[in-house]
Image (tube, rainbow, N blue to C red; front, side, top):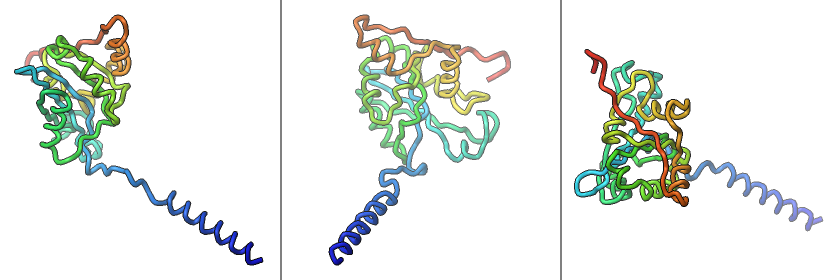
Length: 209
Protein backbone atom coordinates (compact mmCIF):
# COMPACT_ATOMS: atom_id res chain seq x y z
CA UNK A 1 0.00 0.00 0.00
CA UNK A 2 2.86 2.36 0.91
CA UNK A 3 4.60 1.51 -2.34
CA UNK A 4 1.43 2.38 -4.30
CA UNK A 5 1.24 5.82 -2.64
CA UNK A 6 4.89 6.50 -3.48
CA UNK A 7 4.28 5.57 -7.11
CA UNK A 8 1.25 7.86 -7.29
CA UNK A 9 3.19 10.70 -5.71
CA UNK A 10 6.01 10.17 -8.17
CA UNK A 11 3.58 10.25 -11.09
CA UNK A 12 1.90 13.43 -9.79
CA UNK A 13 5.30 15.07 -9.32
CA UNK A 14 6.31 14.08 -12.87
CA UNK A 15 3.09 15.49 -14.37
CA UNK A 16 3.45 18.74 -12.44
CA UNK A 17 7.06 19.09 -13.61
CA UNK A 18 6.05 18.55 -17.25
CA UNK A 19 3.27 21.16 -16.97
CA UNK A 20 5.67 23.68 -15.46
CA UNK A 21 8.02 23.24 -18.41
CA UNK A 22 5.22 23.44 -21.00
CA UNK A 23 3.51 26.46 -19.42
CA UNK A 24 6.75 28.33 -18.86
CA UNK A 25 6.14 30.57 -21.88
CA UNK A 26 8.26 31.30 -24.92
CA UNK A 27 11.73 31.72 -23.50
CA UNK A 28 13.17 32.88 -26.81
CA UNK A 29 10.36 35.24 -27.85
CA UNK A 30 11.23 38.70 -29.15
CA UNK A 31 9.09 41.74 -28.36
CA UNK A 32 8.00 43.88 -31.32
CA UNK A 33 9.35 46.92 -29.49
CA UNK A 34 12.85 45.46 -29.50
CA UNK A 35 13.26 44.65 -33.19
CA UNK A 36 13.45 46.50 -36.51
CA UNK A 37 11.44 44.50 -39.07
CA UNK A 38 13.22 44.48 -42.43
CA UNK A 39 10.83 44.39 -45.40
CA UNK A 40 13.38 44.60 -48.19
CA UNK A 41 17.07 45.11 -48.82
CA UNK A 42 19.12 46.72 -51.56
CA UNK A 43 22.73 45.84 -52.32
CA UNK A 44 24.92 48.34 -54.19
CA UNK A 45 28.59 48.42 -55.12
CA UNK A 46 30.07 51.80 -54.24
CA UNK A 47 33.50 53.47 -54.27
CA UNK A 48 36.58 51.37 -53.49
CA UNK A 49 34.55 48.25 -54.25
CA UNK A 50 32.70 48.40 -50.92
CA UNK A 51 29.19 47.08 -50.41
CA UNK A 52 26.34 49.39 -49.40
CA UNK A 53 23.43 47.59 -47.79
CA UNK A 54 20.15 49.51 -47.69
CA UNK A 55 17.21 48.23 -45.67
CA UNK A 56 13.55 49.23 -45.68
CA UNK A 57 12.25 48.98 -42.13
CA UNK A 58 8.60 48.95 -41.10
CA UNK A 59 7.37 51.61 -38.67
CA UNK A 60 5.05 49.58 -36.36
CA UNK A 61 3.24 52.55 -34.80
CA UNK A 62 2.15 53.79 -38.24
CA UNK A 63 1.25 50.45 -39.83
CA UNK A 64 -0.58 49.40 -36.66
CA UNK A 65 -2.71 52.55 -36.75
CA UNK A 66 -4.40 51.39 -39.96
CA UNK A 67 -3.11 54.16 -42.23
CA UNK A 68 -2.82 52.98 -45.82
CA UNK A 69 -0.52 54.30 -48.50
CA UNK A 70 2.47 56.61 -48.53
CA UNK A 71 0.34 59.73 -49.09
CA UNK A 72 -2.58 58.86 -46.83
CA UNK A 73 -1.09 60.01 -43.53
CA UNK A 74 1.35 62.49 -42.09
CA UNK A 75 3.90 59.81 -41.19
CA UNK A 76 5.79 57.51 -43.48
CA UNK A 77 5.15 53.82 -42.93
CA UNK A 78 8.75 52.76 -43.56
CA UNK A 79 12.20 54.21 -43.05
CA UNK A 80 15.35 53.65 -45.10
CA UNK A 81 18.77 53.11 -43.53
CA UNK A 82 22.12 52.12 -45.06
CA UNK A 83 25.45 50.70 -43.96
CA UNK A 84 28.69 50.26 -45.90
CA UNK A 85 31.39 47.65 -45.53
CA UNK A 86 33.93 45.47 -47.27
CA UNK A 87 31.47 42.55 -47.26
CA UNK A 88 27.72 42.30 -46.74
CA UNK A 89 28.31 41.00 -43.21
CA UNK A 90 30.49 44.03 -42.49
CA UNK A 91 27.82 46.35 -43.90
CA UNK A 92 25.15 44.73 -41.69
CA UNK A 93 27.34 45.15 -38.60
CA UNK A 94 27.96 48.82 -39.42
CA UNK A 95 24.25 49.38 -40.00
CA UNK A 96 23.27 47.64 -36.76
CA UNK A 97 25.56 49.93 -34.76
CA UNK A 98 23.48 52.90 -35.90
CA UNK A 99 20.09 51.44 -35.01
CA UNK A 100 18.52 51.32 -31.53
CA UNK A 101 16.71 48.06 -32.36
CA UNK A 102 18.01 44.70 -33.51
CA UNK A 103 17.45 43.98 -37.19
CA UNK A 104 14.92 41.20 -37.79
CA UNK A 105 15.01 39.53 -41.22
CA UNK A 106 12.12 37.08 -40.89
CA UNK A 107 9.66 39.24 -42.88
CA UNK A 108 11.99 40.20 -45.72
CA UNK A 109 10.08 40.24 -49.03
CA UNK A 110 12.60 41.32 -51.65
CA UNK A 111 16.29 41.68 -52.48
CA UNK A 112 17.34 44.27 -55.06
CA UNK A 113 20.82 44.30 -56.54
CA UNK A 114 22.02 47.57 -57.97
CA UNK A 115 23.27 47.48 -61.54
CA UNK A 116 26.96 47.72 -60.64
CA UNK A 117 26.67 45.06 -57.93
CA UNK A 118 24.92 42.71 -60.37
CA UNK A 119 27.66 43.16 -62.98
CA UNK A 120 30.35 42.11 -60.49
CA UNK A 121 28.36 39.12 -59.24
CA UNK A 122 25.60 38.29 -56.78
CA UNK A 123 26.34 34.68 -55.84
CA UNK A 124 28.42 35.49 -52.78
CA UNK A 125 25.81 37.90 -51.42
CA UNK A 126 22.92 35.49 -52.00
CA UNK A 127 24.86 32.67 -50.40
CA UNK A 128 25.33 34.77 -47.25
CA UNK A 129 21.63 35.67 -47.13
CA UNK A 130 20.48 32.08 -47.66
CA UNK A 131 22.71 30.87 -44.83
CA UNK A 132 21.38 33.52 -42.45
CA UNK A 133 19.03 31.79 -39.97
CA UNK A 134 16.26 34.43 -40.27
CA UNK A 135 16.26 35.22 -43.99
CA UNK A 136 13.31 33.94 -46.04
CA UNK A 137 14.59 31.87 -48.95
CA UNK A 138 11.37 32.61 -50.89
CA UNK A 139 11.93 36.37 -51.00
CA UNK A 140 11.94 37.78 -54.54
CA UNK A 141 15.16 38.86 -56.26
CA UNK A 142 15.46 41.82 -58.65
CA UNK A 143 18.12 43.85 -60.41
CA UNK A 144 17.67 47.62 -60.36
CA UNK A 145 18.56 49.91 -63.21
CA UNK A 146 20.85 52.28 -61.34
CA UNK A 147 21.12 51.95 -57.57
CA UNK A 148 19.06 49.65 -55.39
CA UNK A 149 18.86 52.33 -52.73
CA UNK A 150 16.95 54.66 -55.06
CA UNK A 151 14.34 51.93 -55.59
CA UNK A 152 13.67 51.45 -51.91
CA UNK A 153 13.48 55.20 -51.28
CA UNK A 154 10.38 55.55 -53.47
CA UNK A 155 7.14 56.12 -51.56
CA UNK A 156 4.25 54.23 -53.23
CA UNK A 157 0.82 55.92 -53.34
CA UNK A 158 -1.17 52.78 -52.45
CA UNK A 159 0.92 50.00 -50.91
CA UNK A 160 2.66 50.36 -47.58
CA UNK A 161 6.18 50.03 -48.95
CA UNK A 162 8.29 49.85 -52.09
CA UNK A 163 9.12 46.25 -51.13
CA UNK A 164 5.43 45.34 -51.11
CA UNK A 165 4.93 46.92 -54.56
CA UNK A 166 7.69 44.78 -56.09
CA UNK A 167 6.49 41.66 -54.29
CA UNK A 168 2.97 42.18 -55.63
CA UNK A 169 4.30 42.67 -59.16
CA UNK A 170 6.28 39.45 -58.94
CA UNK A 171 3.39 37.47 -57.46
CA UNK A 172 0.99 38.71 -60.14
CA UNK A 173 3.52 37.80 -62.85
CA UNK A 174 3.72 41.40 -64.00
CA UNK A 175 7.41 40.82 -63.48
CA UNK A 176 9.31 37.56 -63.72
CA UNK A 177 9.34 35.83 -60.33
CA UNK A 178 12.64 34.53 -59.02
CA UNK A 179 13.17 33.61 -55.38
CA UNK A 180 16.51 33.78 -53.60
CA UNK A 181 16.64 30.00 -53.32
CA UNK A 182 15.88 29.45 -57.02
CA UNK A 183 18.41 32.07 -58.06
CA UNK A 184 21.23 30.60 -56.01
CA UNK A 185 20.45 27.05 -57.16
CA UNK A 186 20.62 28.17 -60.79
CA UNK A 187 23.89 30.02 -60.22
CA UNK A 188 25.38 26.89 -58.66
CA UNK A 189 24.33 24.72 -61.61
CA UNK A 190 26.44 23.98 -64.67
CA UNK A 191 25.11 27.04 -66.46
CA UNK A 192 26.35 29.36 -63.68
CA UNK A 193 24.04 32.08 -64.95
CA UNK A 194 20.50 33.20 -64.20
CA UNK A 195 17.85 35.43 -65.74
CA UNK A 196 16.44 38.03 -63.32
CA UNK A 197 13.79 40.74 -63.65
CA UNK A 198 15.17 44.28 -63.97
CA UNK A 199 13.25 47.26 -62.62
CA UNK A 200 13.84 50.96 -63.16
CA UNK A 201 12.36 54.22 -61.93
CA UNK A 202 10.26 55.94 -64.57
CA UNK A 203 10.16 59.75 -64.79
CA UNK A 204 7.10 61.22 -63.05
CA UNK A 205 4.17 62.59 -65.07
CA UNK A 206 4.32 66.26 -65.92
CA UNK A 207 3.67 68.40 -62.86
CA UNK A 208 4.09 65.47 -60.45
CA UNK A 209 6.91 64.70 -58.01
